[in-house]
Length: 248
Image 1: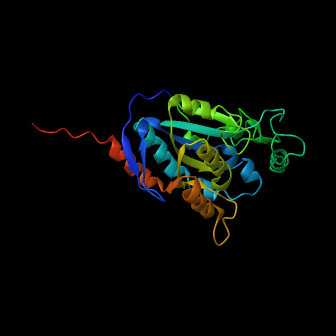
Image 2 (image 1 turned 180 degrees about the vertical axis):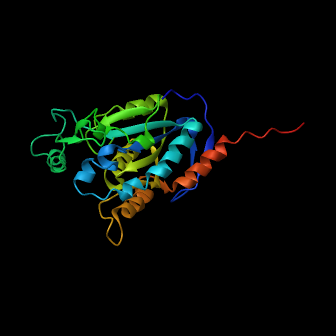
Image 3 (image 1 turned 45 degrees about the vertical axis):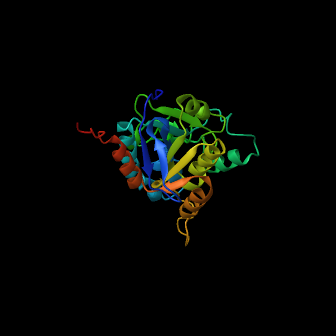
């Protein structure tokens, strides 16, 4: 993702208030849309997690990424993945290590195409971004080993170097990695917009008020802004319209 030289301002109709963004200082962040969390044969599927909430986000996220690229907005992909020796998983009794081991991190599996892999291990089918959202040349792709994309990664340095101030969030899961990254971004004074239909959360999906809905409320109240992807797309299309030329 190169340093943009010139952008255009546009306003997104969001909650709790409209927010104006400069396309040259904005990036779309795609959180953990990888095979282990989104595809049959991945970590979530093996653990019996219902993938439908995550799968439903793929189509609207595709539109967002495609339109953002046309508008000159950079795309950042975050992927959850650990070293093969699990040296970055945490100490023996750390919650990060204990909880991920319960999900089978490091255990062998066969990808749908027959390739051998290991759950949540870097540079395998498991941690590849799903085919529908595959990164392109020039996109930023970063591994993380904690829920937040800012924890011991180069994310903040990259965004600062590029002059990015507004982050448009998509991905999974809403209440865990997306929420954690938004909070850390807000602490660093980024303006965060979560696209509600581009984020999914299996935890609490069967409760009267889902964790997804609860996270949307907290984010729009304290940590940033929330809207659906169609409103973001309208804002982008508006700023991509040719500038009017005044007559003589």
